[in-house]
Length: 279
Image 1 (cartoon, one colour):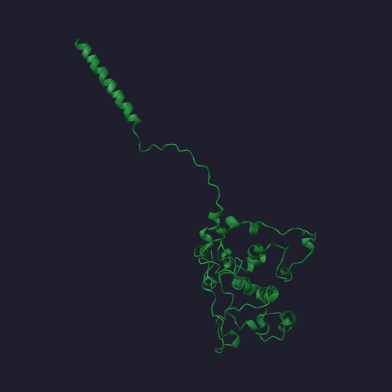
Image 2: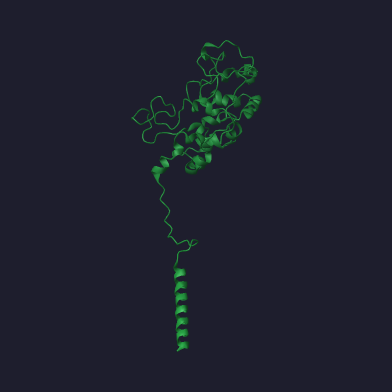
């Protein structure tokens, strides 16, 4: 009898230990990570892309080219057609921008000519947000709605995503030979100045190109090699019938008297263009 009771107690104890072991195994563990079925990748949202903060101030001021080209890489991947729809061969024609000797190579697309061609790499330091300062995707007309940019906002021009008067005109305006006291257009009188802009500009308005969207040292060197590099951006590729009113940055030995045509001009470039190289 004594042995039977002991055996029964042993069985009960073993059963209790077994049940405790099972219960302990069922308890949640802190290191246990349950399996979760992965969600399918979300479909790209057009609206989220359009209203990305990068399309608006202040984010666009610090946007890098890499961020812009992540969605707009086609601006560098597109190529000029080998022939027009009417059959004209590209290699048998010359575009306006090819007329100045400083441009070398085949015809190229608009954005590539400003970002990656040899001339752009040598003389320019343009970035996407040099020209593009955002836009209102709902209505690209200032003052068209209560919540639209006011008409005084010069960040963009009607139906355009840039402001040509403050971007394109900088390098594509007319050569203002009248203001400079020349007898006529540069093309007709450049021989009288030895085809060299530095004949005069070695001492006059000698503080120039010191903005972060240009490679100032390379431009000055190119100017010493000939006037074509200078004229290319100062009338040689003019798209407009007017000249750009460049800031009249003070230079050493600058006359104290300001000419009448320069009285309303600023004396420094826009703040965003002053400083070190842009990202």
